[in-house]
Length: 496
Image (cartoon, rainbow, N blue to C red; front, side, top):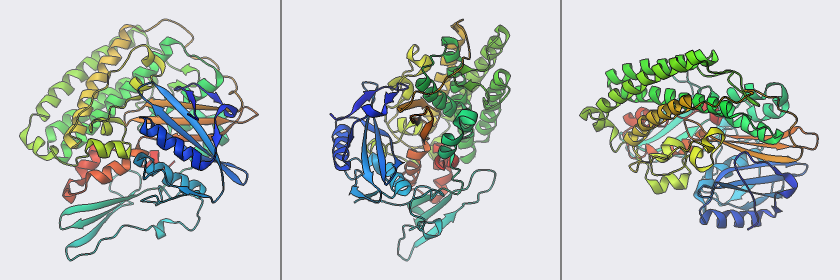
């Protein structure tokens, strides 16, 4: 097999990554994926008149990552991988949009985000080739890009026959912020601050992924106590957002008691995180080389008391909500994604686990303190709104149990924060974290002068947006808000 094997947060030298013709890389990808691997990153990096295409595959059973590359002439075409390995569909679309290297035979070769750095300057939002339908009862419903409230812009176009949705097309990219380019330009001065801003609701998840990449490249091993504090914050973030999502789902089915209770409970979680970090979203905690804040005995006591109340309230409200006939009538069989489709699309996180896809970076590619305190994966099979909501309910309680376990066994080693030196030259690091939406992947490539020359980010929304489009098919258009809340994907996390 023409791959180099590595692991999460274990860098390799660029010269050790096998380089082959694009056709050979394609053949290797197809063979390895048929043997059980899956794609976690696939992107191009300019190299003069050519583009270096990197493929990163994950063998979850063995907790291993496989890396290989191809050097491709700019504007070159190659047979698409997607017809053989469907999970590549979004990665190949992005590669084409960014580099102009065309995957011939791709079944849905459209723009991913239409950012300012696209290869084809003629491919603009105004020229987007929307799917169309014909028929007497066929009509289109356009929503966005401007929405009520304060969410980011995104356009949804529904192709409906009567009240039933035949197809949903999602067009993003209205705020393509160029975060990856900024990472290359400003990583020494503000890399961690950029990481915290990739997706405002995933501050800890992306900051941990960035810190892991930098620490692996600089050879820093942070203390056990710092690892535990990071994991506590990551699980607090997971619990807080999941609780908020349950409240939003309750609101969409007019279960106002659940909306009120979950809303109050979420506030209790983020205010408890505020007591540790000075920020309700955990900004300023994770830093390259460790963490900037520590637990005192008084703070540990406060966390235990507050989380005990959160656990009790979530458990009580969850039991009531998921036994309510009127709630179940709206959640059951709505927006279902079957396991085969979920695997083909490459769904990750709770959305994937609700459809039987048993992926969790904390268990499959453990990082930080999770290497010593394993997390057991939970899955469901129905893949509907009920399953995606109930997965959140399960994971909230699992996260609180994990936090309490960490608070009971915090190591007393130091330092909490140590200086990270210069990254190793000519190296490639993959850092994976299980954020609350799912798998976060940061890939960092360094040059000869210890500088970062390429930084590639994959937010879980990147893979899961198409899952939402699939879920609403053959459902009533009035069920879209409910399906949307059950995925709760990020516009800005996609529009990097």
